[in-house]
Image 1 (tube, rainbow, N blue to C red):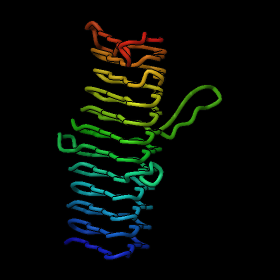
Image 2 (image 1 turned 120 degrees about the vertical axis):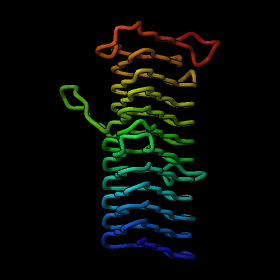
Image 3 (image 1 turned 180 degrees about the vertical axis):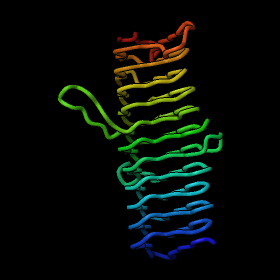
Image 4 (image 1 turned 180 degrees about the horizontal axis):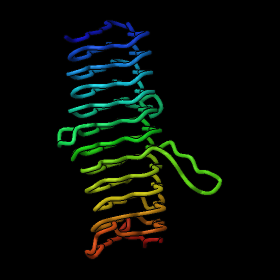
Length: 277
């Protein structure tokens, strides 16, 4: 059966243990926080978490669904301390704050994974005004798309650099599909990005910094002429497309096993300004 939790008015939901259902888990507040101290498990169904009004969502344990995970807030933040896993469906995380990127943030402290090998498992992480912060790998196993779209806010991978210069951090991966990361206003600071098909990262108004990006087609964009684009290592199979005025690509390689011509096109973010490489 289903597990249904609902709080009306200004009420909040706070469970101190695990929430488990054979089919769906549905937890909704109208204008209060939704807090789960344990895990959320929808064994053969969907995990649906909704915090209305000023409410935030915070789960301390893992979220597991046989099908799809949907977590949505109107104005509050969304924080998951554990992992998020779907066995067959997609993962959809969204905040809709209109004014404050900190209050509308999505914070992912554990790994995020769609296990299906088919095309039914996408990962969509979307904020209207909200930063996206992640510390562990976010992975689409099948042919689906990993998408991070931000209206106003930064997109940041928790990464560390050791004294010897080696870096580590969370990876964005679509093992058989594509990755699309973009913010309208904010900086992008990523560790590794891998897509079997297209890997696209950009900002309309902000800097873009990536340790390593790997795709058959790699697209890199900073749309404002005053912003910087820097990638330590770029690996592509067939094409690299760059649109920016201030470009730093330290190491460009072709994917192993590829013997075709690697095409690269570079355009200025402002047609009236030269590219500063």
